[in-house]
Image (cartoon, rainbow over all chains, first blue to last red; front, top):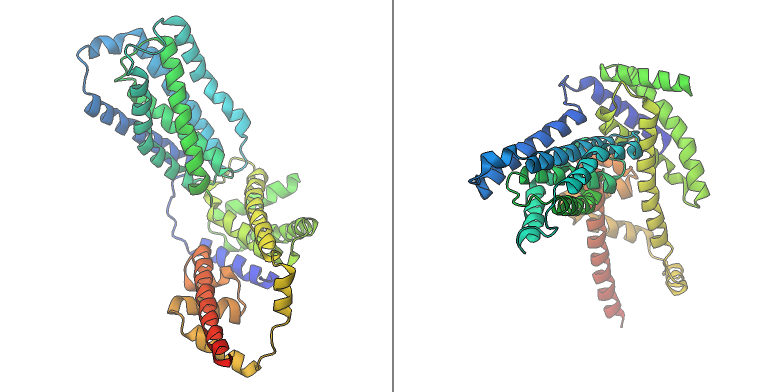
Length: 214
Length: 194
């Protein structure tokens, strides 16, 4: 148990730290988060191309509507999740408003689901398990990167911040996975992409609860 | 409120530029206001208000370590409130847990506590010193500081240049070790009497 004089000493010490610290330009939290998201995405694209290889119809696929829809919606989701994660990592920001940032990505997915017909379970019985497992496995390293970026911030609700980190990592992993995704059915994509991303968000919440506390 | 926002935000900006005095004044003003708030909240929750100062320090350290997350283009008070709220809910949860733990003694246990035989004071002190000195160096320093000199966890952590968590862990281990030693000692002496 300490007294008010102890506190005065502490304050004095803390203030002295500010005076003596070298003027290093620490990167602001938002920039760190943004850079780590970009880094994670590039790394994941590399991993996807390495693991799944370049498909024979790559050129045609990259120019088709399904791919454009998939990439646009997942990247939109990632942007929304980035805004959410930034908000969760900085004290005094309004998180409820930031949730709206997810709307464009979700709207695109819904649009896609309504536009492109296809079987909901995909082309083969393995489609769904492959999709979910790939996205989950891809998102784990991304989650680690995003969580460590969030630790530089000051999340005042670690569980929520972890969940937003999971959303971001999941959306980035999904965006990378679209390069290898064999199923173009709108409902399939909308349903299983969302499921996988939500799973990652749940993992993020569970992990963040512990690792993001400070 | 607006004036407070302006003065504190300005002080924080000055602190960023390395103005130690402004920053120190800011922290003491925040501490002064928080002290009252925390004492009030602790007393309402039926907790020991003497813990208030520890909580004040905890919040101060929290906002000091996370000071870079304040964006100087954004209002200061909401940022501060969010940090204070986070640190206080955390600390109060911990205090309540500790309080519950402390009151868990049954009536029988209390009576045995109260009936402890009077011991020779000098011998007890000597015993304590002997046992403390048998601890490993790190634990000995922590026990010396916390239990014998009565310093705070924070002050000890700062002096030993480790984290508070590490100090708590070391104290815990030291206590376990001492309790073990005391148990062994007592059973030995009891056996002697029987």
